[in-house]
Length: 430
Ligand SMILES: [Zn+2]
Image (cartoon, rainbow, N blue to C red; front, side):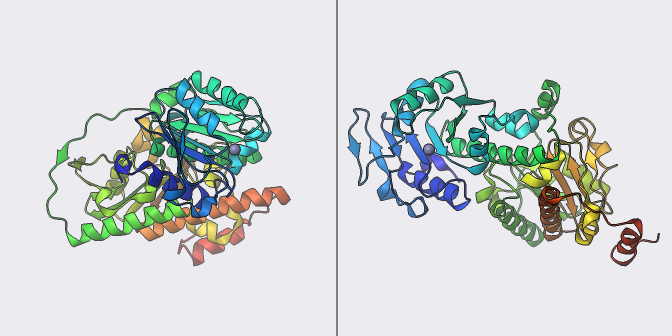
């Protein structure tokens, strides 16, 4: 979706609806704004239900201070204005009270975005603004001063978060990625100490791929159309289930032979349509598309394992928490988990960038699920539904374990119980 042609009032309504719907703010908390090229600020209103906001409710504050609209502007409008004054490169601001980031804010701690490469890339370092009365000029000054130092994400002590972007889509994606980072770090903290990536590791992950060779698309086969339809549907479902976020998650499906379709790079997973997916054939991409950077790894896996028909890279919060700590994910705790996930090995961070062949030592049709060190999960499936199902089982298992450890020590199934599962469900001779 091209957000550059959407009216600012409509875009504010869309993004506020998404933030509210996915429980990233309450009905009374949070406000968004867009800086108009004429210097006016379009902003969400004060005291209007965030769950049923309409374009007519959006307020415009002109550069001379004159207010146009059916409601007063958000009471927190002073800091929006001051951020735009401090940072002329920012054209949109998201402010909300999502629980993960509020948890950090009430502890006056900053989420460490250097634990995950995508968090580092999308959010950068996070600043902290000193507490002041909500809506006050002083709070505005405190926040703008931190933005002026170059931060795009600023936590407010005992309050929430403010995120800026070059447009509202950019600010929203950064906001959502930061909240997921916070949620993941909170869960990782329950399990041990989350390992930070080194400068070298972050550089490795920020590689720019040489330009891909392209081929002109021909008329799509019905098989290709089916793969596009199924994959687009499950990418959107994955977003709705919070297994993928706007900026994270690569999902592909084999069409036939070594040909497959894959999610595009830097596209909001919420809106993926069949035509947005990139067709890959013999290492080349369909012209006019920018396939996910996971394309090379997926191609290698399809070539090595003819029985694999779908692959997902994702960073759901509970399973990703395990990817960042030393503790293994105890899949021997639940029969369904062991059957769907097996042992869940952890793939060393550098391998997916430096030695993709080495990844094949960790995953295969008989070991279809792995954690990627500080980088989420990798899942192979016999089809899109199978891969999605394993992703759901993995995330639910991780969540159950994280809840379980709050209650007491886990009890894993013994060798005899595991042996029975392997014989009866996995048809293994042991
Ligand atoms: Zn607030």
